[in-house]
Image (cartoon, rainbow over all chains, first blue to last red; front, side, top):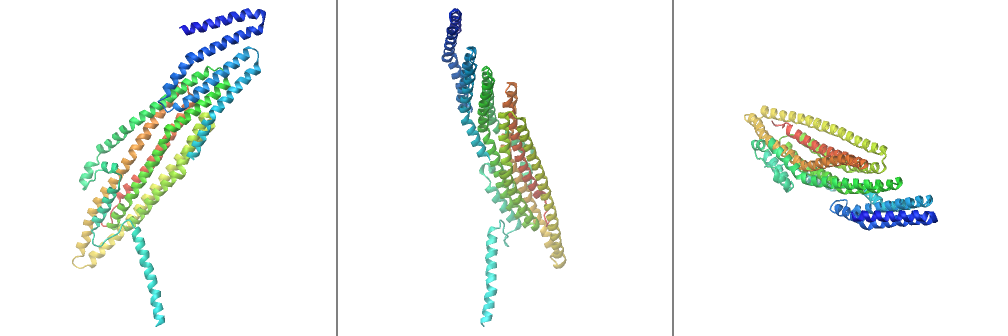
Length: 128
Length: 384
């Protein structure tokens, strides 16, 4: 309950700052919005997101999936961060930067999947 | 003088070569006839050797019935039902473990799928799904690779027990005058064992592996054409298996029938000759063959039934494990469908079909061996 109140407070502060700055300087308004969004993102990452990741990792520890949960959690983090950055850039009117952020995220995901693909090829060689 | 010596040496050398060849071939023969040994004792000795050669866990379960009455009492329906019950109860606990692992995989996959839908970027979601499916496929292989090894070990054990049965069959056939049947059955069964082993190692096992890889590709790519190819390959393998079984059962039964008829004709001719041309005792000697045949018939039935029971014992446990594994995959696929994991459901469905194919291969091999032993039990003895 306290966490959601803090997050709402940061959002409202950022909104007020953005509205005040918009009249004087639009660029500063965007910066205020971005700062509020980044602060919320860091707060979530260090708080509830970390707890959720630890819970899922502990749940998967005794299963046959345990070796791959770390990879999937990393992939999910990469996907979230890329999508978040892309949305931020789009809202600032920088479509090219947004596309670049998405492309970087996809590249990182494919790099993360490469050991899985090579393991699959090893299995194919073993079976055949 | 010199010419006579040369002729003598020329005659002696081939005789020495012939003796060496015959003695080396005699060492390779699984059964040797001794003039002072009674035919039923020789056959019984071969049967005892077969029982002693079985693996200890199978020998404990096989109750060696010394008389026909005991065999009928011991190998009853309740005995076989108890074997089935024990096999299923032994397979249930590992099956539940497999089911729990697979269910855990599906639940985690559905959690990650739901989380990926919150990313709100189509291309990132697609790449993340690919990553998730690769993890699922690799985990499924780790869980299922023991199933491939199980079928291989079962076929190896079946083949080795059947190979041990061949000398018993030859001993009984030879002791009872079924010389043609001995040669035909020994050769036929050895050929069948070698053929089944080669067929599995060189054809069926690679086909099953290709089907598994195709099912993973179909699940990862979402391409229905690849899934169709995997299904078509499974259909071809099943059809080829049915055709091979049909041909082999036809050949075995035809060979057994013709050889048995030839041996019976030869024995009847000998008995008639003995009865007609031996004065005073000819009829008694001819009748004594029937008495010997009676005791050999008992050994034949006991050996044949014991061989079938051994094959049933060997095949029950792996078949129960395969069946429970198949059930676990089916249930997990259904749960994956309910949770909205369509590609995971397709992966589990294809792997379940592979499990069914492995079941079919294992059952086909066991049925072939049981059929061969049934022909042995059914074959009439020449002196009877």
